[in-house]
Length: 169
Image (tube, rainbow, N blue to C red; front, side, top):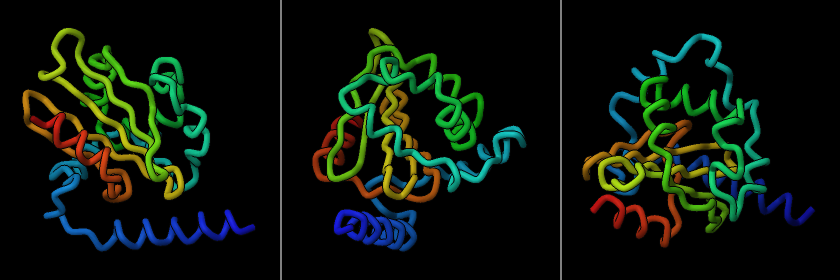
């Protein structure tokens, strides 16, 4: 019961803090055209992301996206296509060659993938806040970084923020 109350409180805190962040947030600014990309997604993918839980992703800790079956999971596929649009999702998926396993820090899970033999030209990092049922994607193409947010900006733990900044350079 105590764990449930802590999780519930954490969820409210995360939702409140995400809703009060501005686009000037230096951590992960939302993409300027993410609404346009969302509008391009097929109507069949316009499911309410609040209804599909991400609890199963906790089992992915220590596994790469390929080992976890991330790109074979229809819940994740639908949500990522809705967030990125089909073209960007396809490019991300095709360039997810060299990969890191999912790690967890302060309740946020993260994994990355990049173009084989050329990570600086295409590098993707996925952030998942299971408690608030939220996904963010950071795509770095030749040092140009673009953030995609599903329900709002996920405030990254210190080490993940440090790693993100290093990836952008």
